[in-house]
Image (tube, rainbow, N blue to C red; front, side):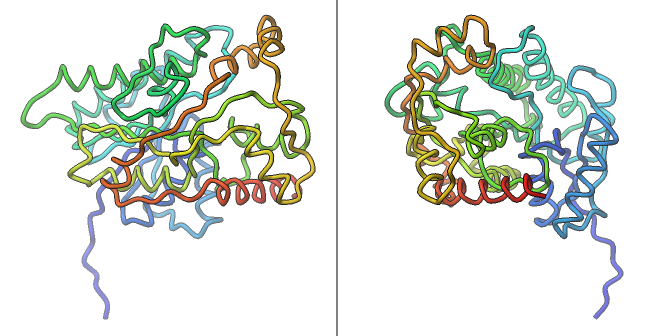
Length: 345
């Protein structure tokens, strides 16, 4: 039976559509019956999204693109006209401290406010903001953290990324507090742990996949003594999509990770047990990292993690979304297999 009646799909504006998490969000949004308006910074990124979706049998007819930059006001308000929801996933992420903090801080903090202001003017119903567990846990170091916790940005040795995610999320909640009303914007924060999982495309230049690729190649001779919860990218995307309409989620922040702390040595051992030869379980002495940090920006960025051993209380996420995370070992091994296949092509 044919039905020629046109169905008007709800449109979600998705920032960072070409990124590791963004691509999975595009896929799951389309498969869940939404129309996606993805923001990208170049026509090359747009082409990449289209090719990746086509390669993964995702119908691209309900994907459109806007060329936008988090460092510029231009185009944001117009891009949100007709959008019911916004997923703000885009934010710079690398462990090494940048030469200039503004390289990371400005797009993270000012970019988030730029997106929220445009969403408010366009009468968007709900914004899903991708934060990180680093905004909750990074000044706790030991024990259990919850969605009620906040990182103290004045804590010693915090890297620029941790500060950028914490300050960006705080700015978002402050904006919501200052713009209350009957038709006020609703905000849901999804805070992933360390994100693994198979990439949809062939780009493995993102931070977590780069680290894994180096481990597999035996290029990381010693690992930092740090352990914190991890999550699969597919789970992160699923929670973002569920957060669009879950009535219990509005005005809340959610931990998107397993509960148990996973160390770099744990990950390396799991890979060794699976037959990979490159990973090292040898822990780097703290004094060595502190010495390297004097002249190496990546080592300096790693200082924020040293001695960290944290468990996540993800009970609110599990109950609100009826969610069970993919086990970390499964995620790690599927990621490693995908990365190896990409490198061997």
